Image 1 (cartoon, helix red, strand yellow):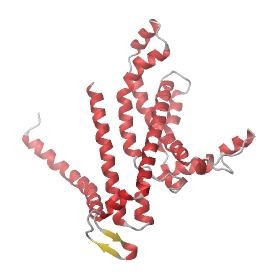
Image 2 (spheres, rainbow, N blue to C red):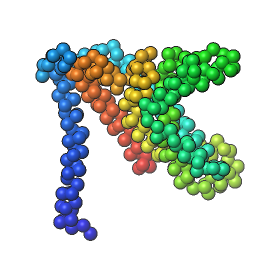
Image 3 (tube, rainbow, N blue to C red):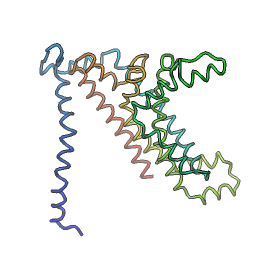
Length: 288
């Protein structure tokens, strides 16, 4: 049993780590909050330490804000739909006995370990390239005109790239959940004559609900900050500018640190609202 002395010693030992973590998180956040109330344009030599909420008003009234917010939500929703649907199917497939099962699982999980910038470059140059991409060669072989994905369907192209990266993560979590399912339930339902779709709907899917909720929560937090794939493929053009990319443009391209900081604070608040909402759903699912 832990004594008061041992508890004090434990708190003392973890104190440095907690202090470093707080400094690491709080200092950038406090500086962003400070600059969001200032007119700070370093390239023009402008610095006014307090202008009130002008940066927030300008950011909200910008015509780019609603477009960026809509693009962000559309992109996150589409990627979640693809990864959850594909992850469930892949998990059910990988749970079946097959030759070389271990190697197949490693290959399926492999894309998750590729850096976002690298995967975006691979898809841009090897698959979506209208002159030398594999899809263009396939279209020519079928007697069709090559399709320029990045200029004609830019949002869909980025969704495909990011979904390809995150599909292994969803598959891994859902495969673990599938393997924990009691096989006797499925065998009893099969002996009672339940068709495959009914077994999936009434036994497998309810069993996967907790894992699906966890996947949605974790992926949403990371997907709200998609940047590298947009920067590499379209550079924010063709309606692919998300909220994160808009903040980047305000800070680095427009050299307006104050306006960009206000956008960053807005993005943090929106991300926390989504996270709290999802955490409540996760909590309810875990309680049931």
